[in-house]
Image 1 (cartoon, one colour):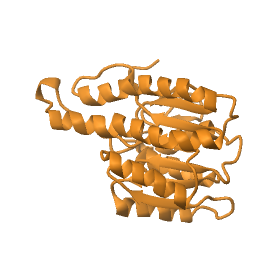
Image 2: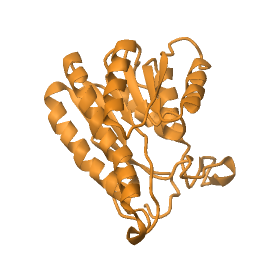
Image 3: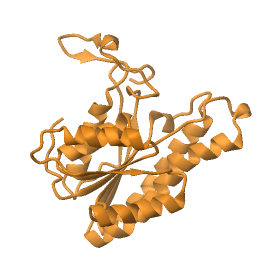
Image 4: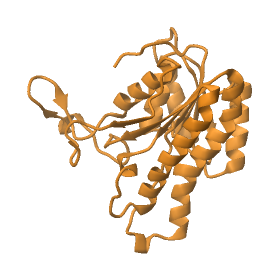
Length: 255
């Protein structure tokens, strides 16, 4: 998938940027020219992402600013968005990737685990969207891309809090799209399948040959999904992808 435009001069905020899909999205957006604010809890891992961006081919690569943060804190989110505004400019692209889970059956799930999942997976998306909305409106538009999950389209045993948080993102994203439309603010929800992150296991050894020479796999490299995120960000401003389901070709349970 090739980029259809440039993000030079635009500011993107990416959560979960210390690893996995968040890191891949930050690298892809910076490679397309965006100035990228990287949010996650781990400062050392964010530093590694910044260093990887600095190692990209220099021409056309955007700046990167690391912002260590606890996304469960509303005050920290408000302060972070204002800090980014002063460091890089108004956020035009918000990419919500950060997520956590509390695995186990419902009858064993405690309130602390439930609240932690909801705070990171759902409330942080609400708070970040709320914080960047005025900047996007004043700037004449923007794009909010949120990584949900195929677990937000059907429930899974032992993943009640995670599935519930991802289902709720559908309603939140649709509301953001409806309220943002008059201000040229787009909202897209991704439903990714299995990826090679700390919740998945993709390795070259797991790739399986299909008919012909095209390799396929039962899980996706996050870099492939990051290409999709970047394509959405650079797509024509009068076009919006409301929801996108993306799965590896051989993922079990999907046609």
